[in-house]
Image 1 (spheres, helix red, strand yellow):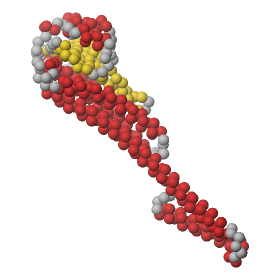
Image 2 (image 1 turned 120 degrees about the vertical axis):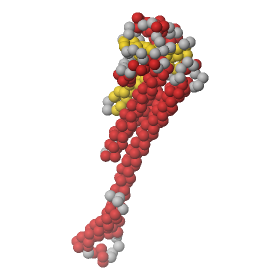
Image 3 (image 1 turned 90 degrees about the vertical axis):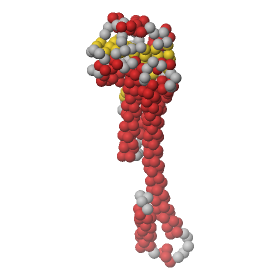
Image 4 (image 1 turned 45 degrees about the vertical axis):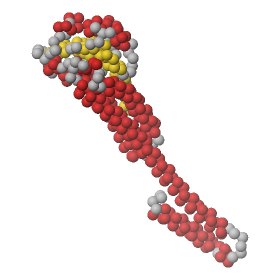
Length: 326
């Protein structure tokens, strides 16, 4: 469990603060308080709720996460629920894990609550910790910046999937007879589809934030940032669709290799069948019961028969080779 409070001050120095000692009414328009809660400790959540005056419905969702994207307005603050993802590894294949993430944007403060550590929040914190100019931002603009990093985390996971598909394509081309690729493709297809299903419900949130009539942005100038964020979300959806198409393209590549292998086998069987057919035809002709001087050639005739069959088979093999059947 962890509760951190950090004050960005455009007219002073950025510094960590104790939440119990920090009063919201003392904050100026040149200051911004970021409260970050990791875990679901009831006492910490209730402390945050009483400090920033969260509605009881908001506290309820923190103690019992809804697990799906949602946008709500409560008086002087608005709440954004999203599903964050963290890269993971399942065996040799890329994967991800899902974590509910809640934002509360109010006058001069922003609260983030998540059940476990999120790397993109830590990266953002490390990047902006020395930027005292952030105190001049309102909480909505700060939220837009965090949500942009949230979308970036989806792009990073999608990049790992695309890299895995490229590596799989290379292996399929180098080792087309390996049937284990089919299971890898099925698993990649499942995970890409799962990622898309996690991302898609966010459309309601980002389009809601981008609406000109959204009440939560009435007192801020963050509207253009959220509209740009909505466009970025749509690009993320396009990237998820593209990753899905890449996996399907890999399946087509695999099936093409399988079809080529089958075609080669059929061609080889055709050549063998024709060759055996020649032997059978010659043996059938030579075994007829008609009395003809030609059939009385003895051992010499038998040898010539074998030579003739060999020549015919050689001609068949030569023709097959010229046609690239073998």
